[in-house]
Image (cartoon, rainbow, N blue to C red; front, side, top):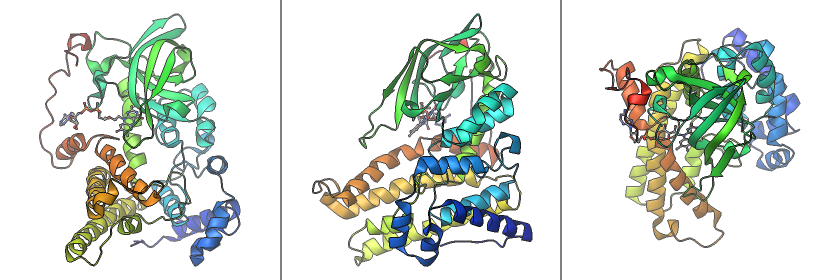
Length: 416
Ligand SMILES: Cc1cc2nc3c(=O)[nH]c(=O)nc-3n(C[C@H](O)[C@H](O)[C@H](O)COP(=O)(O)OP(=O)(O)OC[C@H]3O[C@@H](n4cnc5c(N)ncnc54)[C@H](O)[C@@H]3O)c2cc1C
């Protein structure tokens, strides 16, 4: 189901302008094939399309980051413009975010807010064009939800900072040119006050990246070790001790960047042959005549509609220029758990075939991969438990979560 709100005259004009731009910049036949539901033409057109050159084209146009100021490569736009761009990209089966999601969605806005002019000139345009991929070096083996407790240390030595420690869960570190690094520069003050934010060249001497093999068989994320890594002082973002404020900008943008997308529905590489996630789910369920299966499918359908309506409310608010409400967090928690339930249901409905399939059968291979990958949904981008805590505090007004070590110097806190 698709929901639409009426555009104002200004919004209609902007939508038309962007549609024209898409027509001019996509391979011939792309827009037409989608309009006419012509899969053959779409496949032909898709074969002439490449994600890297697409990222560059969008990056140079300003549409990749409409909210960014014009001088840094955006269009100094508004939330409704961003929403219209997302709607049109999605309608045209294009990725809502390129492979540089972390660069465009997280690093860019942090540099715009806290970086100096040199940093803005040096990094922003190459983030937008995808020429330099970024990763996020925040989580550590002992610090995830309680990020401010992290231990990686940065010690000043002349014009450089020397970094020692370890990060984990670092998505796409193996492909990244730069990382947003949060490190401890002062252990003798409370945990939030002793952090600083750096831009790390991932190819620096002493950076060791070890891909972690997931149960899906792929390696999305990595462990990253720092052994006397030297970072030039000019790569400090904001001032010394200001890291938590900068990190909050990154984290707030992480929520916003991920809120408009949904983990199971984002086609990062774009132009997927089968786009509708509901259809993918339906195709994965056998015995649809069985009354029990039908009953369950009806329940999933109802929940899918509720989820869509919630997204629609968030999108409508964005389009009306209102600040995002609680829908982002609510949808993140719901989507993550819903995705787990759906994939579990498909696996059960397929019985033994879902664990022992004929070699090379992509349908069952994909089903098993989606089932295994879904386990991460309730952890990545903030765990469901922590998001529930935040919702209970910010939406329901319940008392804050207990934090006994908030005012104690970090060096005096017990570590795990
Ligand atoms: C696929 C994936 C990709 C990721 N990519 C990145 C990345 O690129 N960069 C990066 O820096 N990090 C990344 N992360 C890390 C992610 O941010 C952390 O896993 C997450 O914040 C949880 O931290 P943790 O794993 O240390 O779990 P913990 O914080 O140790 O939590 C363990 C359990 O305790 C619960 N818990 C913790 N605190 C509370 C509380 N106060 N109240 C109730 N329950 C609580 C949690 O919900 C969880 O169930 C990624 C994670 C995943 C799964």
